[in-house]
Length: 432
Image (cartoon, rainbow, N blue to C red):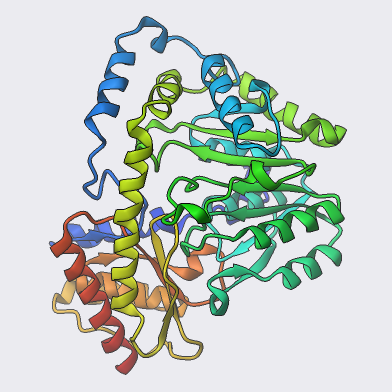
């Protein structure tokens, strides 16, 4: 074309969680049965949405107003309801004007990074959830800036590493954290969160906290909301109903804004997000209307409690499966529904393989595994040999090698067989 029309950050838009599916689909067309361990969709893996939640949504669908445009920032009744919940916790106080709804958190993340000045960077964890790291990298045109999560310390943030990178990089304007963490399943204790907030205060930064899995914390005494401890630091919390009801297809997420009045630049930045949303008119109405109905129902707390007990049991099961395999390292998840399996340094090379019976599949995998990251090579062989579709850790903005699995499979026998296949494949691959 006469002019280059491609954004400078286009090459940073990577989402391995979905990209690996395209490979799986090609193998499926060759006759392979695929077990999808790549994405966090509880419903797709067999979890049933409680009937009482379905009934509430069906009832709302019979109301004409559920077919209307919502206000730009979201349904006023829902925003007021959420603000009241935050205020009752104690800590930072908000009003309904501090709540902004989006069509899923992917929409929110696009706005958060898309309306930052290009020179303003947000440092985030490694490994990192791909949507967040890719959006930040794309907005800047450079690789995502990261601080280390330490697998030898239960995947806790390395606070010293974080401060050193902030101190010596004046372009950093914000700190991103994910709690509970995706892809590791770590849950940060209050001292760790407070240390990160203290750094934001010390260096005059804002905080972005992805709290998508806040209600998927197995031990409730470990659950801490950002609003409770943020103090006077400007911040954004990302929330959603997708993993809680669960209703991932609702694409209903929102931002909770804290302390926007404390800093005029932060306040103007938040206004730009609202202005951008106004250009789209609003976000989807029906899922927003369901939130007060579902959250205020006395059955909801029990629903969350039962789900957390299930995921805690599966986390223990997964830990027992993988913790004694030579060549890998695992930490037991405490929240969300993922576990990261980390290969020990130096155990992978470009000569290892798994036996693949189907000649067409074998040829296809061998072509794919040329010049790829070592953990991605393993994932491709796992897919070709066992039909198991997982995500390499290097796909999460990480230089460490490993992969992520989910705790979502509801069929106990199928889940056990899947983990046995992975266990067997790791041993075979490392000894090949």
